Length: 458
Image 1 (spheres, rainbow, N blue to C red):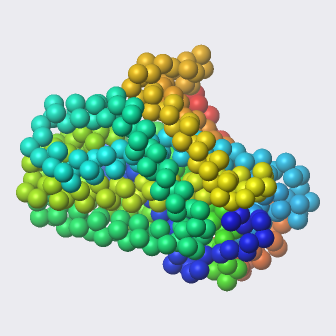
Image 2: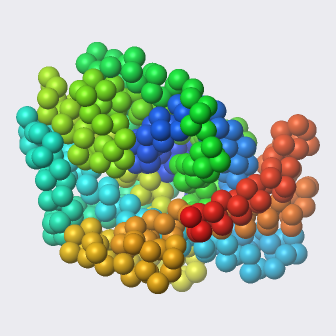
Image 3: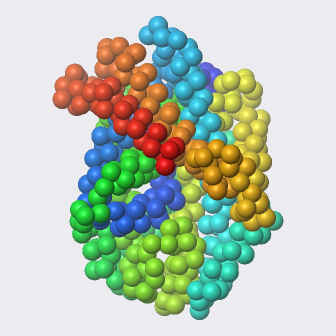
């Protein structure tokens, strides 16, 4: 039920909120992209830069979104309108929230497609299809999946069905109940995979790859990569965290809970690195294969190792947990917006919002196979050579997220009085608040503007 609908529904506990927020933040990018980017950009040298941006940019913006949501108690755009009205600013600022929801909708449309891959590979691992597989067969298997629109559409439909099943139950009975299963499953499977990596893989090479600082690899581009990773990983600019804030009880400390979310999100990404790369190095695989690391390279390890059938299935359970929890958070933000703006009953709004994402996802599915050489936005330099799938990802990650974060920092940093910020955040005007205020007003906007321009012109 939409927060602005008068339901008054809230998270039942701080633990439930933390699991939901971490579940939304943790996704496929944490499992494979963060360890890969970390290793390719100087190991712990990149980690220090990432942590600086995660807490210097991600934390202030996460606090900002949760505070706006709790103050407004509506959808992303509705909360911005409510706060703007309270402080005498233009209600047009609500468009920033709608922009975030558009971003969440776009990401949901293709993220569910990727989530379907994880279910497909779980089935393959569990039924023994990965046993004794070689590089040629592994590549052919993944290519065959991408070129099978019927199979992709089936799994995409399954993922959307699971999303509908969860969010139609509401905040406590649906989202909280789901993440209380998905997040412990994610942490348990991560721990199992890390332990197995210590026994069967090369942990020494992994430690060197991930944590040995190599400052010669640190460049301006490295800093931009760290900003992008922090932004996308935490989930800033999608509107969903404003909605999560709308369900947040007044007595919960926003700065404290936001800090825990970022620590857990980063911790999962690091644990994923220590789960994946011992197997990569131990079995002589290529660590720099990007998305193929999961769907082409790791199956080779599972096919060779003792107990690979079991541990392969466990690993893809991990991916399913990460993918589904993120999809649920994205969908809730979109459904919340639809409920409020179209004034329709929630169950119908769920079908409309999730159904529209399913339809858009069909275009992404087709662009992976038959339409793989169709570049609809080739007339725009920034989108040259991009399929529909690539263009949607670039639009969301390189443009909409940054614009949303930039506008939020300007609105809340400059137009909202300090008294309101102190009251809703429930903090004193001390060192922490001063740091947060300076970052939101003076530091974050120019950094995001530069990142946006660089991302478009690159």
